[in-house]
Amino acid sequence: MPDSPSSPQIIARRLIHKGRKFDYDEITVRMPSGKDVQRQMVRHPGAVVIVPILPGGEVVLVRVFRHALNRPMLECCAGTLEAGEEPALCAGRELIEETGYRAGKIQPLAAFYTSPGLSDELMHAFAATDLTHVGQQLEEDEDIQVEVLSPAEWARAIDEGRIADGKSLVALMLAQRRGLFAKP
Image (cartoon, one colour):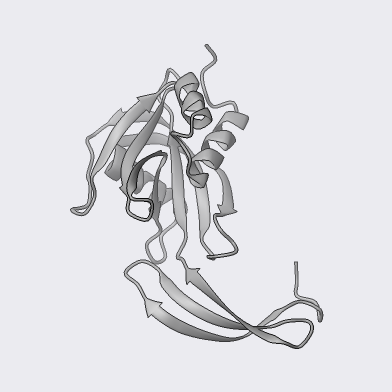
């Protein structure tokens, strides 16, 4: 939606911290009332989330320790886009790196903003099929365990709160809506 005269306008931006993957900005926003307010935000290059589906409909998930939560999480594999990288290429790279599977087919599902009140991160969701196991290629700072769950098992994991991150919930729902899981 284009800005209208009554829309808030960003009038200044200041880099608070340049991170390894993300930047942290403070912006000054002029509100329709004329008042200026400050907001902090995470500037993000974008990311991908992948639902790797085996021939029987099982999903290849990863268990990764999330420092912000101080606990491991069961998730769909995901990763941050490199500068200028196409999302589908990033999806293929992250799939091999984190799960050890190469996809014969990577199908886009949708793109969505993960936390628009906090960040400009645009997440691109993909389904990966025709999988071949080639072995994980983890980065040196990664410790990721692979888990394979049937549709009933991952649905139960969602119901029980064992899959609880937004990107995985959205990606699994999108793949399910597209009818990508084998019917029992």
